Length: 254
Image 1 (cartoon, rainbow, N blue to C red):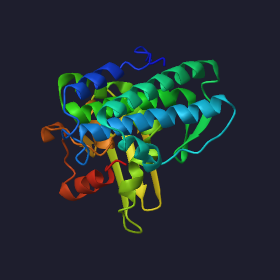
Image 2: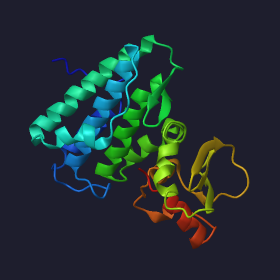
Image 3: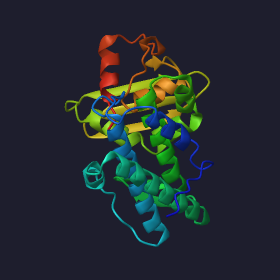
Image 4: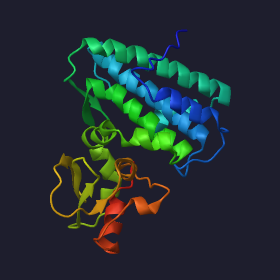
């Protein structure tokens, strides 16, 4: 079986592999409920599902996105060696599928998890998963922070994933309660978010007025995904604990 994975298309793949192979499968991670093995399961399921949905689109078909349990359940039953083989196989399949997708209109909207994504975003989404869960394994080392800080990570998080990233936190809001926040990082657009119990909005906008919180680009991506940098001093705010606490509660990830 061809297991070739395009390092140019997925430059985050090799750092992720290195992070996993330096640790025991049962080692804990910054994703608190997951071990390294759980992350490998999740990544194999991600690669499989992204490739499955994108391949169906290329074949002129439309398929629904399977939930995490449906795609990850069979993977959890594998031993560690077979699980690693499964990840390699699924990443190779995704690499071939993403290459084939270069030949179709790139601005096409394809259904994915209750929303739509443009064709190039499918490979990009796997790249983001590799960056984020690579950080879950390594923590705040310099290389992980540099990958998180790349501008495309913020853009993809906001434009392609923003709605589901706010959905969990919004469910905790009381009827009539509203949370608004402006998240600022140097030399970039602000991330503007708002949420009520039944609706959310997130977007990029030029910096204007006071920010709800200020941080570096890498830490801001972590916050959007419901995570925290190891150093709390990377997050600065003057809005007070009540407002900041509500914003941090909204940013709880999936």
